[in-house]
Length: 461
Image 1 (cartoon, rainbow, N blue to C red):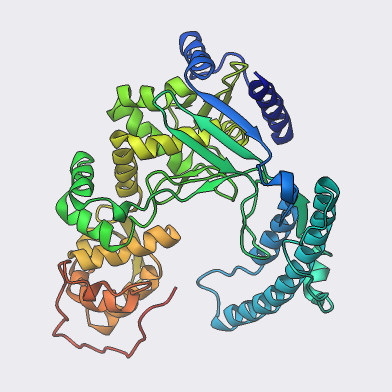
Image 2 (spheres, one colour; image 1 turned 120 degrees about the vertical axis):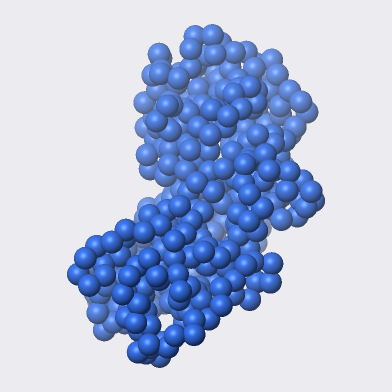
């Protein structure tokens, strides 16, 4: 009972801190399903939270970034972004400014971290009655702040502060037990820290699963052997089906490529849940709905407070999931145990990132023409090259600039004939990896036409 009482306090406080606006009669959970969720967590699942055992001897205070400081850094860096069509001189100028700002911010971050660590050590010493070593050593004060940075944004807030991370322990009816510690460590002067009580678990990397199990999942997801080879070559399986992250700009990010809900509270994570809900409703109910998680018809997350029965949707649902650690645990448990959830992740990854059927527009001789990626890139190496860019940037890299130039270089006038220079396009677009060197992928041959070809370098960001 003591654990449940503390849970009620934490839940209410966290909801208030995030400014969530619950609704009593939401669009997703029926009265029956509402009662089912509340019954599950009162009889079959447990949640307890408190300071870690080490706090008794070491104190409870740690040094972590401030959300305000991270947001300030993000805005500063955002101001230096340039359009990909910008002049090279402008790109170089912005890169030089960014380098200068980053150097100062790294120094300022180290200094603030040392100050916060000393404060935390004093608090810990007061708690345990002994001298406690600071988590980070003191660092020298930074030099004078760059004038252009100060003129645009003013002095930054403190980048670090003392906090008290809590341990959260969740148990499910099937015996699954999961635990998290809030207050995630991140790189110094990091721009993407958003939730101080967020948690992280990397899970088990997909590529470590037995090959026959991975093959069965791809088959179950309706993904062809060729598509599977391409997805695996792009290292899309580096993460874990059971990975969770609720501390950064993705807000709630789940799975092997971190499907995120972003600001609107749906995005790619909502698409994963919609896929599973449509294709495997029984497994979806058993792994999500009965435990208080769902998705609206338009792909927004929905979460039901197991104690009050109040429903949250969209951004408010994301905030509720971050605040109530039962919900990240629901996602992680499903990633560990539920094949249907794993297949839904694969299906969504294919839909979002596999480029063959995606439409690409390019200007040829002043006329905008449309073509599918598969009409230009007909081999697995070509599709892997484009998918690599899609996963990393959300787009097709510099293909819109590269393709017209290379068509002119090789004397190609019709877009339908551009597949003849697939080998050269891949060579010019290789990014993290040269897929022409991946032996188990089909690959094009170099063109025999030279045309008016100009020398150009490969790569590019």
